[in-house]
Length: 325
Image (cartoon, rainbow, N blue to C red; front, side, top):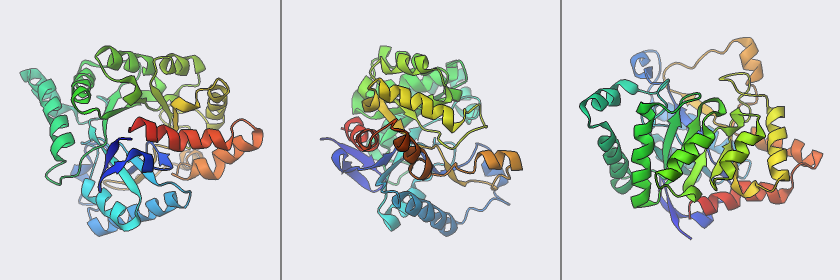
């Protein structure tokens, strides 16, 4: 078996155990840096909040969390390391940038005009993968990629191409964001045609689509998909969990459990001020927490006979061990 980088150093992939593939301990939309007078930056407070989240996750038997927070959205590897040291939870962090609509686009757009951006993105990926992030020595275990709703923009393409180039040299896993479940097949095709290893690709947020044919198009390319927004419903075009259950049941019925990951895409601690949700949205998001799958979704599916304990073990343990081999 191979090793994967965590914020505490390399770990045998066979020892990752029960894994959540997509959760954010700390996240802020670019621009939060300008609201830090009222948005706290207290390291100890943030650390304690992260520890509470980690313990909640560990109570469900989870041993590893992949935190794919993009570089410009508040990624803080020192905090992640502190949380991991305090709790023993293994955390895999990312290198990468968010999609054009909600990412910090001016920096690399400026450099794109100069004709240097794509090479510089590749250099950034390689430096962080090989030597560590921002002088910490902490290395990412994945590259985070993202595309817009119904398109992959020229800006986003730079990151996809640079990531494939870096993967060819390092073997690192590529994990993507699809906006509202669109462009999954196109992402997979783009990455594979550029030379990426399909067994090292996870196409994320596919549960944004309830069209099982979209999922099958992606799965047939030999990559993994992530149904990773459980509990996030009624926002950003997300379907209801009941609809997601139908898709998951159908895919497992067709025998695809070896290519599926499950997670929540929770934001547990916000950078800047904590957003205040309207009552109706807060009600819809009441289960958007990183233990929702284990407390509510999986027991319901087991009770219906839609999945088995074997399927659960495959999706949460065997798949992560193989992905990071």
